[in-house]
Length: 269
Image (cartoon, rainbow, N blue to C red):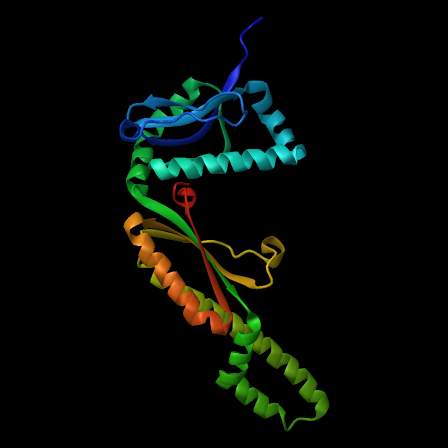
């Protein structure tokens, strides 16, 4: 019988010289059988495990990811936890879940081909952490504030007081829409101002799409979702500013949630 064929499951890549300072500790790979290991290609080191080619071949893997939700959840968590551990030790370029190479040769070819880009990424993210900020808002206190303090809405409400009841009904509906528009404008301006202040602390930033309540399962609406690449010596200042804004804005219905540190997912792709 021929030897069982294997593929390469890649977790991430790190500068080879960092392994001389912090030796790599093998861990159990995604298949729970093989140990993860390293391969050096010049200044770049790959952290990977071998997996059964039959199980991780494109169509088979796609079917498994679709049909075996327990495996998918467990494996995705394994991948995430491995990356969290590695990023605490090394300057890590994390791979997406289930990044597969057909052979050592194909992995080496890809890394050598991308060596210059990889070295640039190492320089960009070295000594940094990725942090995520989500801002939630209770619309009711803010809506009340808009009603009380918006000159255009106050003027409009005064105008309709003298109208017949039927007209008032339709004009009030217009006011509701006007309040909604003003509310969104206020929320966007508030979040953009917070983002601008945090950007001064961060090396890089990216604004993401805010999630709906269906995704978050939260009562409050998510108004803002952004990620920041922050030098480790600036993280404390970042978190202090978030906490300060949280305390200042809580009475107005705002809630800030900063999470991290994460591998630099959003700054390497």
